[in-house]
Length: 313
Image (cartoon, rainbow, N blue to C red; front, top):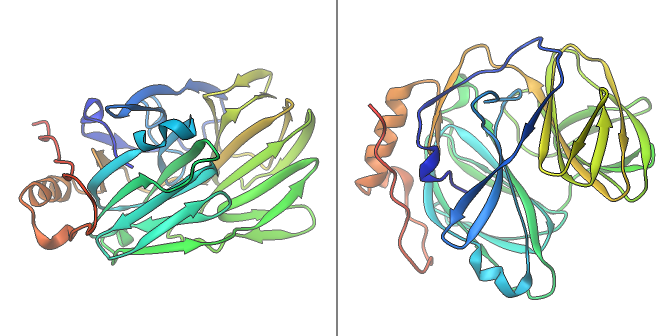
């Protein structure tokens, strides 16, 4: 997935470590393609990162008749990992390493951009279920931001119960009261991404890591937490220094909890590029627009690639 031209500001992204105030951040609609809008959850002007997580888009539900509206042409990335997760529907990933991978509900696509990769995401052949999902970006720490690019597909990730909720561990480790669960997803920095779903109203208690920052985004339904009601398309930033958290989930609620250790130094993010060094970002922009071999070619895509907008001075 790609950021839109209205997001082409060079941003310095850092976390507010040890903040404990619970603050609400509504998502903002963004025009991803000429025919498709998404809810942009992060980054926002006052919320750039939660641990390593620097980007979260919520797309759909897109009706089956409108599936072809989801077509993101080839575009580049550096210095990050992308995670695509579907609640329903089906997508097709194509990248410059030669991978062509369908993604269905319950499966995980993880792309590590590292020193440079390009990819496209399009609606796959599927006519029954609406297209509905999330895409997350995790910034690579400076020591690993130029790692070799790779793509990994996981047919399943851990699922377990927390109270009356179904938990799905997309990334990282969750230490429950009786057992510890670990996602197989490749990771370069301590963090966690976990989906919680409840068909009925319920109260749950979550175990947290005190050194992690946390945020919770409500995909569907509502939660009551820290004396506040958080509804669909709103994220609550919880800061860090917490060992547990209690929340009440309304009926038919789905949320994603993000957490992780803050980076030791700020990172820069502009368009689809993340780095601790702004010069690397500018160089990547110039190379992509010039057609440099660094980003390879997404073969088999029918259409033009996206060009990078000019960087601000």
